[in-house]
Amino acid sequence: NPFFYQHSVRGIAICSNGKLFFSAKEIIHEYDPESREVRKLFTTNNGTSDVIWDEYHQRIWTLGDYLYEYDPLQDKLTRHEKPVSFTDGYTFALHNMGDSIWVSSTNGMWIFQVKEGKFVPFSGYGDLEELASAEVYGFFDVSEKELFIYTNKGIFVWEKGGRITGLYSEWSKGEYYLPTLNVRHIHRDTAGVLWLATAEGMIRWEPERHEIRRFTTADGLYDQNLYGIFE
Image (cartoon, rainbow, N blue to C red; front, side):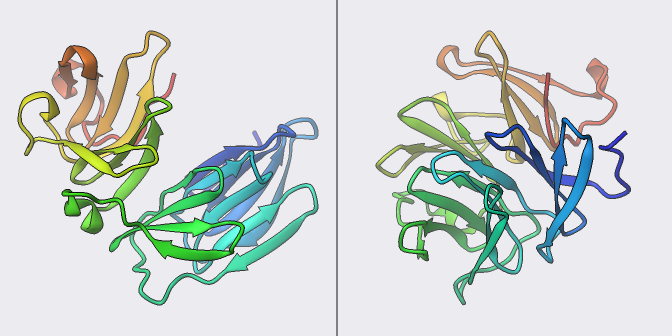
């Protein structure tokens, strides 16, 4: 089994040629489904980073002691220095925004401008500065207009092209109430229902209908401390 690995896998991406890239114990690997061969590419010096495929630039991106840009077609690796004020966290989350890559840290978010090859601080917090000190676990495209940023302080709502406009959490009221803070993963099923992996179980969520149901070990889960949901 080519996927059997003695260390946990922290990020997986599939590029346009069908090859799969994953992070395991500070090393980025390439898996070829045709030959079923696994090749070690480079070391990131951080074993908990996300790995994403950038269709626009045809690149693999990941983060460690640098922001790494890998061109699988040319087999070329480029390292980008992180800002001096960039604070490393336990996990890193990346998101492709077309002309830029969004990067999370423990002192807020950063934007890497691909064409210019430089980092700039994220400035779209609006009135929700809590995001500036949140541990960002990932990003979820809700629609062409909205992006969810899920963290250890709930789910922040970003209006694309604008700023942070809302926060779903147990601290919020009304339509923004969500009975959790730690959201580790978001999955949307074929019916459009959102499923949240949290530190307190799994949540079935339909935001537009304000319908929420939590599943715990009492409902058959083996463990309530969840990190991902897939089907």
